[in-house]
Image (cartoon, rainbow, N blue to C red; front, side, top):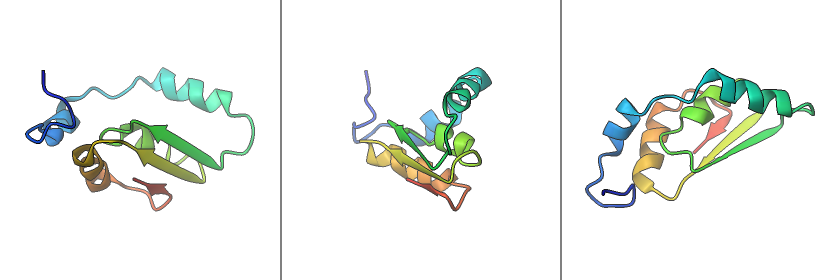
Length: 85
């Protein structure tokens, strides 16, 4: 089975075909954060879907991943000035 860290892994295909997390996940995260929403850190961000979804709800969003290919995909799709990959 291929891994994100494998040299030949198609990160762009993963980004194109990976289903988005359900809205209920984001609703749960946002309901949990009753204090000011200063920083959101997405560990294992992959192609950055969660970063993009939560960027409008936090002052700053940071996506972290061990796969350089996934980080490139996340950066390519980055839409907000307050998000960093």
